[in-house]
Image: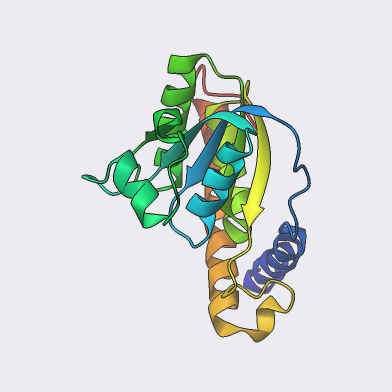
Length: 193
């Protein structure tokens, strides 16, 4: 039995890794918001670039350390503010569930119905699962970034990347299971995918 479970898990892992995005599929659709999940290289810079290109009305950066404000974020990015500062909001979530929860509250407060989600390509499946669960009514456009240290093409040959993808796959499975149980046993649970 354990061999069967391990085989199913392994097949799922390969499918998960193969399905990771390797490009930004939609580079032109404008959304109400751009949401950046902190925790990896290139994310904030991509979010600021998308905002400067007016692909979203506002930028929400989720997962910022307590005590860091918008002005400091812009300094960290080594970017000229170019009038962007008033269009940026921040949240202090400590994990992906928190990212989705605080983004929902921020979106609801503004009446926003669409967002462009910026996070690492390897983190996108779990992020999308959480965001769809918390906000099934919101249109989410994935905008992955591709950190140089994550070698997606031959992920199994790079121990650091392999470990990262295995970890993300397990977390994604756990999230999907949690969502399924919530919908099954909790009256009024969200109906997102």
